[in-house]
Each structure stands twice: as structure tokens, then as C-alpha cells.
Image 1: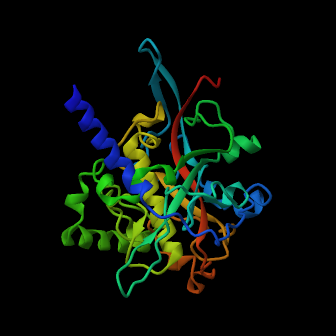
Image 2 (image 1 turned 180 degrees about the horizontal axis):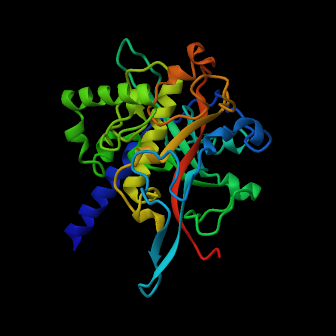
Length: 346
């Protein structure tokens, strides 16, 4: 028993020592206010809501349900309940990406903890020496349709959250700052962290840029954003903060799906109930920036929301109709595709 206790203490020390031993972040940094409620109508890309798929008719992303006309789900005793298909993208989450630990633009620009007590640290990027840039995130529920009480359809709401609420903080996750600890949940990183996989992901990035659609079978790629693995805040190879923040948001969703904290809501089986999948269903999501420079209109030729991993040159740079925000704090609105079988409405 004493040997078991010593082993348990060693494992716990290995988990938490890396974040306790990190230096505290610099205190002279400021945290901006995203004003997500004051500017709700001005910051949101409402065009991302369309088109909807009604009765199975309409444009569908890869992996969505192919049911047309009718559908059915089994009730508690195994009897079928018949209905009709309805699907579309809904704004459900916010993910803020920052370089200063504990900074939260979505909460009014507050710093939630001035004394970091070793939790989280900033790493200055230097691409000449190969030093990494580290990003942190706060993940919120943000069910806009429920908050505004619009487009509410009974039987098409798999989300239990009804208000704005914080769901996850990277500063409290020891795996977010340590690539080796992250490996405990993502053993497949060994397979996908090699030149052959990188070549495949280059092709994936070219495909997303050309079509605007993700390839579901390439779940280990992050398109043009970079390498999906490791699922941590450590990044190298890119000086573009917009691209880095989009990459972190992809890693966040991939990590939450692995932990069972995000579910699959697209597909024929998922019309009745969301399911667990260990990898992120890429076509299930679209991203739209709401801070510091909102994607709130279709002033560019490619719309105002994009598939994860799509080239940021389409919309962020001057060539895409918007200037690069060039900031260190970003808030992304996450749209999620939901397939539903609407029953008991007649």
C-alpha cells in the first residue's frame, strides 16, 4: 500500500509540477474589452446561419445527415417516432485566445488573477532562435439564439446551456502547457507528426482554400493554420497572430472532443442524440472573429465565416477585403452544425 501511495504521489507531482514551476506572467500587460454584449448585433456574421436544410433539401457539409423527406428516432421503449429533417449552423460557443494568462476580453477585459501563482506563463516568439509562442484560451457557452429567443425549434436543441457561461480555462489545465503530458491523451500524435503526414496536411490546406470545405477523413490536419498536434498552446513557425489564434481554436475543439466535453451533432445517427467521437468533426464547425475586428458583413468575396483551417488571406489580409487585426487577443464565435429529426410538432 505504501508503494502504491508513493507511486500516486509521484504521478500527481509530475502532472502539476510543470505549471507550478513556471514563472508568473508579466503584470504590465493590458487586457482589452471585447464588448460582446454591447456590440452583439454588430459583431456577428448573421449570414453564417444560412442556408438551412429543411426536409433534407439544401446544401450540406461533408458528414451531415443524408435523410430526405422524413426521419425517425426511437423512444424510451424502442418504438419509432417519425418526424422531418432540419439542419443548419447555430452560434453556440465563444473561444478567446490570448497571450497573457488569465486575461478575458469576453468578461470585460478583466485579468481574473493578478498573482498567477505559477499557473501559466508567456513565451516570447523569436523565429530566428526557434523559441515558441504560447497561447491561452477561455471557452464559453454563448447560445445566442436562446439569449435572444429567436429561431428556437423544439426538438432541435442538443445543447444543455441556456446562458453565457465559462466552460473551460487553459490556465488550469496542466496538459495545455506541456507537450509530453498532452501525449497521454493523444498517442496518435506520434503517427501524425512526421513528414508524410505533413505532406498530406499541405494537400488538405490547398483543398480547403480552393473549396472552402474540410475533408472529414483528414481529421488530423488543421488546414492552412498549421499542425494540429500537439493539442497544447505551444506554437512555432508562424508570425501571424490571426492564424495562430485560429489554430489554437481548432486545438481547443479537438481536445474537448477527446475529453468528451464536446459532442458530435452532425450525421444521421446524431439527428436523434449527440454522440461521442474522439476526433473533431471538422465540417461540423465554422469560425467567425468578433474581436478585435469583427467579421460581421459580407464585404469580402468569401463571406464572413469560414471552415476551420481555411486560408486567412481570404478575409483577414488586405487581399481578402479586411486588414489583418494584428493584435494579441482574439475572440472567435464558433458555429456548430446540428442535424435534427423534428417530432411531435403536429
